Amino acid sequence: MRKLRILLIRLLLADLLATLLFFGLTRFVDQTGQITDGAGVVFYSSSPREAAARIDKGIALLKAGKVDRLVMVGGHRPQEGIVGSQEMALSAIRKSGYGARISADVTSRDTISGLQNLADQPGLTGARQLVFVSNCMHLMRAKTIYHSVAHGGPPARSACAKSSLNPIDIWKRAHYEAAAWVLYILPAKWRDSILDRLRGQGPTATQAL
View 1 (cartoon, rainbow, N blue to C red):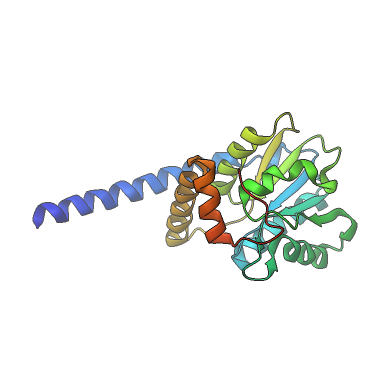
View 2: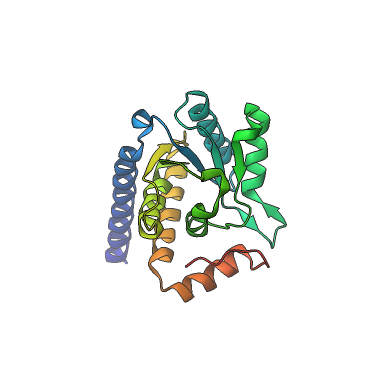
């Protein structure tokens, strides 16, 4: 029993250390200071606080002239009857008044399908550069996926939205991202099946590849 307790303590310490290291490394993802132009791509979040932070970051980029438009992606939930990206776009319009410069991809349900759909978004036509807006941990994954599916698309930079510094929130986010990375590297058919269960399969739901 004593050896088991020692093992569990070591595993816990290793987990906390890995979380801290991951959190620290993702701080270097933010490129806000290097952005001079482009089109903003704001990723959906089911957390009201997280979604608001991403919207505020996108609006701040618009007002600063760092991006000239925003496109919200993700959050198509047919089983819940919601389109998260559209809700975020409407919220951003109400907050900013930039109705003509904010749009939404209403078919993408997750990061992968949202990134695959970028080439088909009218709101991104002619963009020289894309600026991804999300929390830093998510942006590391999003940019990796984008580079694998872009196929000659415009370069992407990342702008981190303000996120909670509560240790519990950081731990939860780090482990969510760890699970998302595992999902991403699974064979496509397995990943599709899991996403169908998690996000719901609707007639307009985009299949993640």
